[in-house]
Length: 294
Image (cartoon, rainbow, N blue to C red; front, top):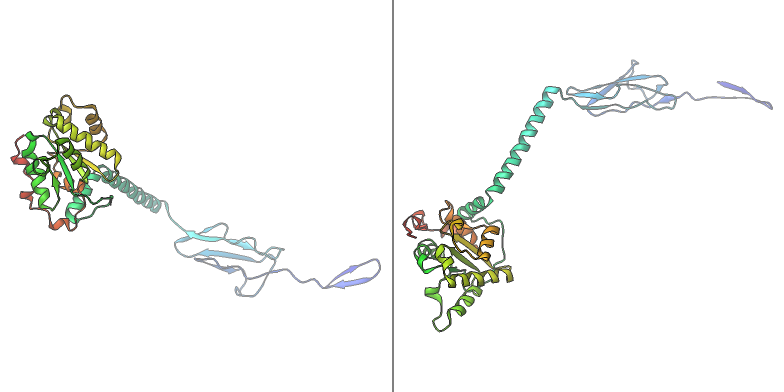
């Protein structure tokens, strides 16, 4: 009981004692009071409670809390995962190794993306990039020099037509009643793509250069049209190469005849075929590169 003398009257009033509610529980930890009864409903000022963490955890902050005059505990600690230096080194090493592995795999996939894409399509029919393919009379128009017809027949015409591709070649598909220039323009526009068989013979032929020019013009005009350049000689050794063909070789990828994945990459550049795996000829029938005389 507390009394206070006022000028006019003599009054006394009763002051309630300051207490704290039971301390908060912490995740992964326990606490105990400094009294025998740690589960009581209230704690007087200056009461002390100590927190402890379960195995594998440690206190984040002071584990001793005090009931203050405000009726609140001084603070509430937390229990966090305890990692010793050795475990930390192991975790960081594993994490770093995983990052290096992911970066290395990403670089390998990027560097060999054309080979990986070609193999996945040839073996499993998977084609990641679904390009727009307009319906046309021919799947491809083949532009080549007459001197290279043996290569074209053994490595392009025969194997691709066995996979049900419809190809256009001058000797067989040009209409005799039209001029050759008209046939070239018509064949390019009626085909989804042009396959250029580049050689010194091709460079030396005015008609071959005309076929390249018409195909290149179509490529610039039509987004769905494509050109596939196949080299049967080293492009660096070709003489008197027109500037437009030189620039195309420098800025575009091309397929060399001695590429180990020639057939797979060739198929990948052609329009997608349903059930491609069941239409691919046996390995010995695919290409005639070994028997091609240039």
